Length: 407
Image 1: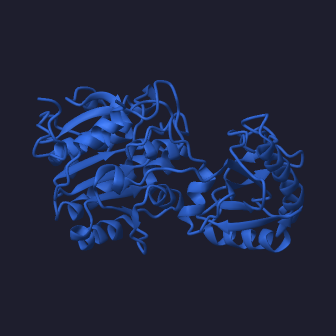
Image 2: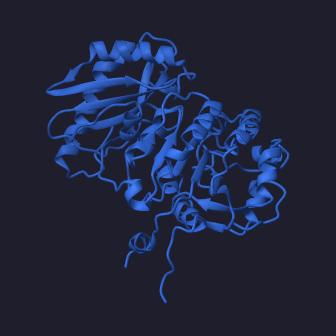
């Protein structure tokens, strides 16, 4: 019997409320330069500290030891879907998050406006994090100039800051493809290739991406600082089982950024829209508390600061979250998990493979009697080190949502 089948067989419907709070990229590393502290350890977090005295802590491996996850695999793991089994292109997730209704056969790419030097070398992968208004202007410019490539329709939609999506709608298209992104500065934009060299549809899609670049780059060549763009997660939408069917929990998502709206929408979570700040997210949670069994609350700014290598900003983002935490605790769920989807160490300025810390609070979590929620404390916690895909199962167990296995 597959383990997922066993979990499904044992799952019970309860009236419990479960909340998963994701501080994106929360995990970090203690280094000499940072006084041997992580941002979580350096931050003043009186509310988290009070909560953790009666909570369990541990560390989670997002995918597998040594593998650095993107946001898609990181979150799918937290939702209980093995990221090695359920692989979803980032473009699909971003498109869904921006409200695009995808059609069968659509191929989506997540794109970043970037800065290129005269030789086509990437000098800034995010174009200085241009404001959303600039991104919208550039996307409108591209959409007006590049509407079709051959018989394939091209749909361009702006996201937040430097991010946007491109959807290719036509016949005989398929992903996934390699990225048109060197993933670091100092290199040219690489040509995309089929993940499966024998797949005719992927070959056609790769050729289309090349033609799109030839048509689109000249349109923004004189713009500053965003005179180029990178494309990642080029893929079509896969079939994936719905969250409510899988866990017998009615889920809702409170996210601001399209990427995370798309991820939660992909597994069937209701989108509680109209929230733009953490305070608004938590206040909406209070309003909707009786309408859903499971809440996913996403907080972006820890990851953003980590990617910028800004220790002070990441510390402040954690402190800002801590200051808002009492709003959530006005209605205490039966099970509360606070964690990250991966680590984003300031020293790395990007995602990493290091296990992220997790705090679990429930009547059955037990008290690890730790004074603070930190990476160091999590190393000593009773949850130990486990794969992120099991977090939702541990939350279910703490909600008494499993029948006994065997006699």
